[in-house]
Length: 440
Length: 166
Image (cartoon, rainbow over all chains, first blue to last red; front, side, top):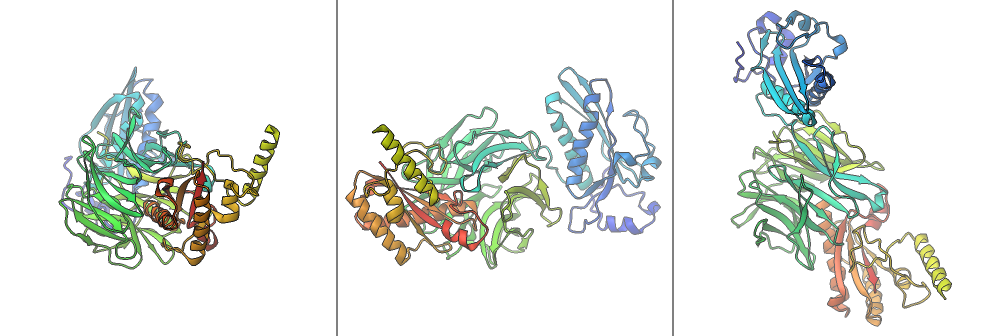
């Protein structure tokens, strides 16, 4: 009854628009994340049912967070609660699907919330309204009331997974730079927030210029570059305790552009001395250091492949910035970017099959993706200044910095299909996002 | 005397503000990393031994073309004059700041600024300035001197600034 089809249902959406409903009644709702998805699937999410008085405080809020998450994908479109005919009076009573078909909902999310002291219990179910089937089993989540947003994000991830067959990205965080002050003397603080822009916390006080924070593979530590000493240096911070230390510093040099290896034990970064910028690898625990490149050129913005075997980076060794990949075992760096223009800030996708980058061409900046051999380049955005892509944990969405002339920097996201360009809400000007993995 | 010193400082500060040149930090001390805004007495710009004289009369800044760290003939002229002054007053420490315009990505611009600062450092050393007095730092595109989305500002922002301090 509740079995989810793992078989791709190509053309499902187009088919639904044309075919009589009865013909589709046997097919469970399934969203294919392809370039073919143009028309978002309508869904309804009534307020969750409060199972006790204290639960009432969260009943609407949790539903709102989930609705916002799902709508933000561009794959789904919420039917506002004001249009609902049906009421969910109890979590376990049978759903009157006709009430939801009448408002053209195709997916329905129901839930309940109970609060006992500091403990919150959230339950949810997902239904395919057209076929009248439940998609997957009902699920119960328990946790602290402080983590109520995370519970909503977890539910969102479950819904996303059941509808698309792919893991979600909502229970995740973003580290970024919160900017303030005049453009010629910008105050730049490292900050952290939930992926939807909520729960912003500042990790540095802004007395020192800081840029480009990067998450560890487990999301509990970050790397960033700060001018605390007056010179760019790399810092490693434990997110929970805020304790931090400088790593990889070497007198008379500048160190920046750090990123973790997939096992979290090493950091690859740039070191500038005498005008040349090379890549280095540092073992965080031992402090042992290896030089990875040795050219007169600028080699910077390195990023590991998910298997930890290779590094993609930008270099101007050919005369202008291009992308190269290199084995960590040493050896030749292979140029992968082939198009016209300058390429920079490459980032390997979590699935390992693509590289996102910044491209500068004809006075415009683009965020783009290519295969790891440089083929199939696709530009996703264009503006006065787009830069610094970071991948969502499931590799479906890219967040980046955008600056328009005379305007403050802000965070944007775009699907790797090039659709669904959105602004990420931040309390003020923001730049240099780095997306965490899904939280444990 | 105390009053007079203060008056001179105010004059120097005003002169600096007028030419939009709010620099002069001592980088050997941590300045909080706010782009070189520290506090150092600049002295009277009419005093040829003063920092204010160096900044304004000699000129503390050289500019670069897009993506380049090559020194133009004008830049070399300024740097030769800088070197002569620095050789005459050996008590001053020197920090060369490299900067880039905003038309590049953040990390690349830090590296590019480092390359520009190093080029100036190398030139000053060729002109006899002791390596022991020289340090370099790059701010990439983080500290533009002029802010606008036009060539005019980008041209001014691609620069290396020789910051002297005692």
